[in-house]
Image (cartoon, rainbow, N blue to C red; front, side, top):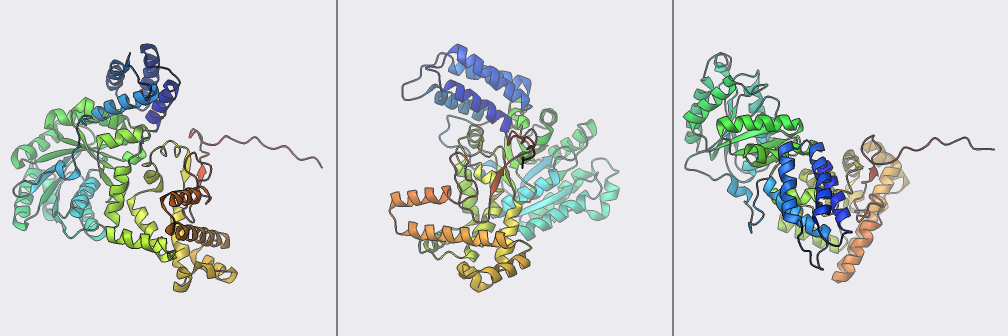
Length: 510
């Protein structure tokens, strides 16, 4: 995400780092490059112009102390303006927390979801329900889309998946009127009646949050807006969230503007956020519509949704990383007791393959390897042209699952005959099994050595481990990461910027 914008900013910062001071001339030259990067990222023209104008106003002629380099000073200025562009407050000591975005009201909190067809609205309803379920809130999904064929059945399936696949003690309830959906689809205003019935059902069952999945259209029209206005006026939802496909760029911003003008939406949810390398919609939507981004969809699974934090996203764009979000993801997957127990086993050198498999599955639930590593400061730009084969995790899992209990406890006993049996059982090769066990042995040994060291020794051992275990060797500032059975390689796709095409070799003379 934001690859083009990040590249543009990085080029500017590198050029300014060689200057003695920030001046009007070098800032103007820098902003020309930033403006080009923003427009190439499909940012709205007026937004790009205003953004560059504000930065020039902040930076031109600013005195830079000896302790701060011009490039660093510019990063600080751009960071503040990016936070504002996303709808945040750069001067706030503490930004809004996820729990403060949706306040519970007496009775069910009613959330009305709207958007065009194909934006991912129904799936997003399930994702939002799953997030609330994790927070211990009971949720009801109401199928108010009576125009699209099988929309009622689809939302019911999503509700069932949220109950089956996502953790949490509460339940995701479903409300739909299957028997009348065909009849309702031909009537005017019948979706309002369904929503009103859902409110009654939610109150009766004591549900905390009711999410209304309203009908969409292929484009914004009077019929769509009339129905949505009726739901808003007669049901009185506490929140109206607009679901927008980030991949559609300026079309997404234009549709968001139309919805906001007619419905006064109080939040935007951007779907397919992880697939858009430009980021134009995300950078433009708040400035153009006035409605802030509340959530972002970062994958296909029902747990792939995140609260949008303006200050954290600004940090990601500028290569500062997002360690806070990374820690929060980890805390959601593992308790303090589990972490302490695992740390004790690692310190004693007692880590086995079962432990490693458990940790690997936990990491996969947190997101893709590339997205997780991209949250580390300075790593995002290094990963831009790197291909990460997530299927390697599947192969590693298959290898470990094909081991006996004894082999998992003592991988060092896995010799030639055992390698062959495990390779056959996992559908991999002898070399892959051998590589995994060898790297795991090195990891276990280093962890045991670190257990008896002081802070300085542990840091040195950690550097040795992350720099000497294959995988990502050669990437600036990253070393090998020490993930057994996992490797990365330079992208060779055209236009990716990674890897030059090799010239065909001539025939060797004999």
